[in-house]
Image (cartoon, rainbow, N blue to C red):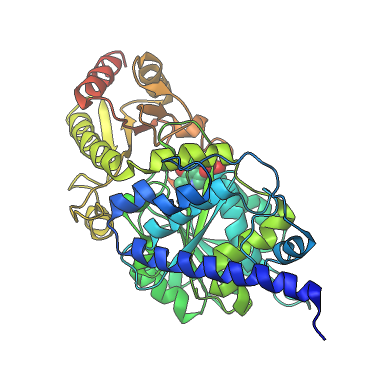
Length: 457
Ligand SMILES: *Cc1c(COP(=O)(O)O)cnc(C)c1O
């Protein structure tokens, strides 16, 4: 006997399979497009524009909290994830999905495998979501779990690892010199769950040899996670070098317009992890979104996704400009008598210049480029750095970076104040350090502002 209810569901499933088949074909076609084309269009094709209703040439914002279903069959199939659906905006939202499509295409650019993305309310939410399932404690006692991380990470990440995760009995093992692969190797054991590095790090611009690090991780069958916020996919795509998961604060260079906070977890399909279930490993980012994300609610607002989509279209163009301007500013500062040292990966004298140049190359261009984050130390004491800082007129004083507008901060009293003097020493942050992120202004005007501010120190 036929079950009419099953038939109803089967009808929706059939339509769902058709749609997914079309999307797979379209995704394959987009994977063959060049970087800028992907950044501009993502998966929002002309066909998709009409499927969304009005044919708008940019992705619409879907503020709706939830999706209405045609009948009970569609609802049942939708809530069980048996058909493509977005149910409720805590779980999935169509605008966010367009952003996830574009980001995952860009991170998997040039890879023989594909990836997926999960967008979150902030970069910190992305990092927390990415690492938590990997740290599940064994059911029975045991020796506890650990993970190995570069000590040169964003201040918030340092706190998350050093305080919040310790509270949950996951021990972080810090690597002081993350460019020395041997230091990582010495930290791993059978209870290690993942390796975590930030490249280049904020603000010290530490780098790791990603390919060597991925080999170490995979020897222990654990994933390598890379915070690639500063590089952005326009300069570096860690998945291509063996990383399993990339995390981003989209708030920064990806969202250079400065209108929204957001983050993303981008994971390659079939990632390495002997601790995750096969189902989670197969498509980690989607699994995070559909299951743990559904229960904890770190979702991005669709309004934010709209800003990120628009900023992302011109990412490569901007990063090229930012990188060139930052080089000009770095050379100016390096020759200034009031400046003690300049830290910019683009300067040939930087000890990590060669390592960075191996990994950081402008997409579809292949010239080494180093982005717009740099730092320098002012000669003298903390008070001298503050005097210089207070005299800046065009450069904004803000705990921020990655902007189309130049911004500067003193890390010791802002981003890295929480971790205390001891933590700052470990991370190499002196009180005279100024972090500068050069924007899209003409570099001569930024140099002029720095010059007049330095004259007053
Ligand atoms: C800012 C930043 C974060 C945190 O991102 P939010 O969006 O501010 O939560 C993480 N990593 C790096 C490298 C950052 O610069």
